[in-house]
Amino acid sequence: MAQVLEFKLPDLGEGLTEAEIVRWMVEVGDVVAVDQPVVEVETAKAMVEVPCPYGGVVTARFGEEGTELPVGAPLLTVAVGEPGGDGATAEQGTDDGTASEGSGNVLVGYGTSQAPARRRRVRPVPTASAAQAASGRTNGRIRTPDEESGPVPVISPLVRRLARQNGLDLRELTGSGPDGLILRADVEYALRAAAAQGRTAAAEAQTQPAEAVRAPASAAPAARVSGGFRTPLKGVRGAVADKLSRSRREIPDATTWVDADATELMRARAAMNAAGGPKISVLALLARICTAALARFPELNSTVDTEAREVVGFDHVHLGFAAQTDRGLVVPVVRDAHARDTEGLTAEFARLTEAAREGRLTPAELTGGTFTLNNYGVFGVDGSTPIINHPEAAMLGVGRIVPKPWVHEGELAVRQVVQLSLTFDHRVCDGGTAGGFLRYVADCVEQPAVLLRTL
Image 1: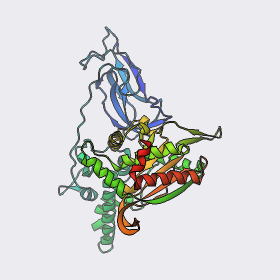
Image 2: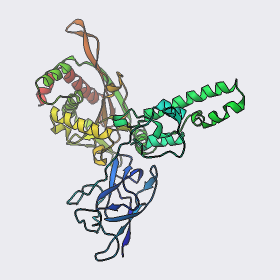
Image 3: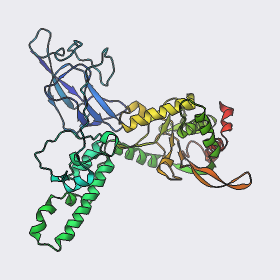
Image 4: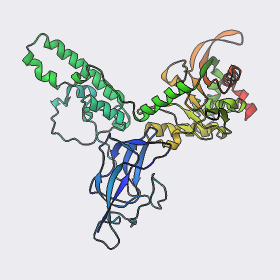
């Protein structure tokens, strides 16, 4: 006879205590192989595909998409056939004869000799624009409740929740993201359009009999958003809120800044890229400057052990960099950035940025940083006072690089100018050290040849 085994939400590491179900990858009745991913969950740090350690037939699932479960809660049950028994076995529906015993694994890729069969993912084709969705119409007709539901191209649970809380049907939206992916901006646009339509309907109601407008007014989703909306601080957004609040509570931070002439740095980058080979990013050059500066001012590459009342310095630089994604702000970490050249840094930044946008970052790629580089210039702003990424001791902020009047060699000229800001933990150093670090960074930006001393 088949034995029914319960698979519980495993400990995903890094102190995580819960996860939200984003997408089920199997249905009840499906045959699964050992270590086959069965559900995609979102933790406070990353999106994770969770593999099942048992092979057999799925008999039950626990939790709908969007449900938050604590570690240890049941995820699904699997009927596992015993050798020689009458029940379903892991060999049914598999090509590699996987044994029915559980692997005991928690994450994909641990301890399995062969990759399990993967279910094909299908991207649906969006059906209508956000403005059409706001009016409840698609292709000139009103969508009826009994139409085919089907999946929608949405990754972020936050986007799903925002639409659900405001009565918006995601099937009616055309996403502006890659391959039609529905972003938060698409939902917010549709809600604004719905609100505007609601205001128009209200104005018309003042000049028409109530019976003439009662039906369309009740059908419009604008009534649900007229008072605004609430967004739970959960998942990535909640983790960011907690970390920033803790940083402000615990770290006595201070900020210093300086304008720098980045003209020569941009010329050096252009010369590197003109020489052939992989293109070098500005972020990689700034990261290389950061690692050189931290070698000269190691106090800023540290953390404070509050219980021991000690400053703990690091002999390596794990460089975090702020990345804005559809899921919110995340800080991927480049391991051993001090040991990488500019080409290596460029490649790693590109890899981690792509993974962040697709929600594929692992918890390990989002933790363990010792210093953070925040390039907020991509948002078209000049300056900021960054909040330190707790428990680190400092963060370098970089504004946009733009042509500005500048005195160069005694003459007024138009130069490429950038504002640099350093927020630091005043417990680990005083203003002299922070100013020395920032001045060295600015000198390297203005005269990239200064870096040759440390290469």
